[in-house]
Image (cartoon, rainbow, N blue to C red; front, side):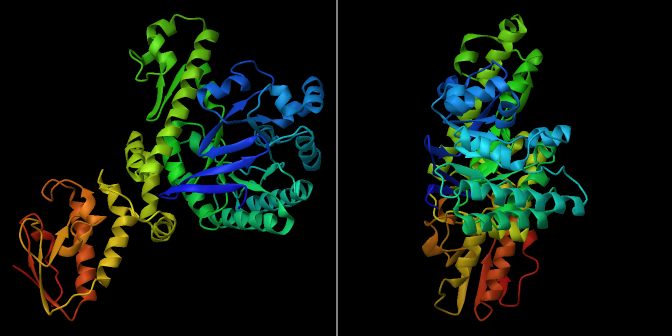
Length: 489
């Protein structure tokens, strides 16, 4: 799509250029929430932390005569005193929390257009998790009607329109919502991004498995050109996995809300200032103060400084993710980050399910430099499954072949943990030949089981050939059920 140009890929993640009226935004990125009613960290200051875009609430502006008059006269950028791109939410959060808002969809969309929002949002209905499917479907249909109404107002505009994807925790509704949102862009002709909405209640209760399932279901039907916004996600511990699943934009007020509660963000979780003796960060705040010094400050001053740290660490993580994409090491980064919480591990393991594994394989960039093993999660990367399938197509000239688990002895083929069979001529090729992993006697048993499963598939595929397998002792317990065309020496 002309407003979203993908420049680099890894896993399902991508670095891309998102075109807005206030400049080209490199994604993935975080949009800090700016409350126009609260003086805390201003939009003007956000650039120094690494922000290229912010988000504010057009409903709050609309409801305040003073803010509304300034926004109409000077635009939302003038109101916030910033030249950064500005996305405006519509009041859906207030609708979710309070159950009602004093504006209709057309009014709030036209208002966002009037004040010059770079990305406007219709008044979608964020259906809570676990809602009955009839209610979720009714809300989804209302949201789609409002999106179509908004799209007609933004047709052929330079500004972008967000088309939120709803459907509660019902995968079929999330897919339907995404499909219909794409159809709106095609029929009306509007530049769009696709926020996945109503997931904050899931994040707040650590239901990461449900969030990942929703994201994967949505990604399974969205076209590759579609920019994906994960509404309300602002904790750095969740960024790497979200990007690896194909999310491009994040927004949150977490940096401020956590700070006001003396909570300190890290890529590995949240720490309470009261329990900290040292800051594990070298940002300008953490380099200047100790936890004890910060605890002695007035609450307002302390909250401001913690919020600054929280912003620094969020954008530092975004940069680390982009670097990993450039280096094709995003899988390795995610596998490190998920160790911070067992529910993150569980969520990432959804990719073992066949339909999600195929989706990841379809969208992952193929060739990389090194396969760096970090644990059992590494066994389910596309590189392993691709190798197992492609090695079957290697031409075997002859009738009988030797397979060895000892890489130092001469053989026709080798058996490596995770990958299975590796032809001698490919022993220096990616991925199996460029894999850094522990020796078989020190690796997890699951790595040997996956390798043997791939070996058995290979032997059955070449059932007209004979194979003699020379295995070290650590392998032998897993090689008891060989097919008739293979013998264990």
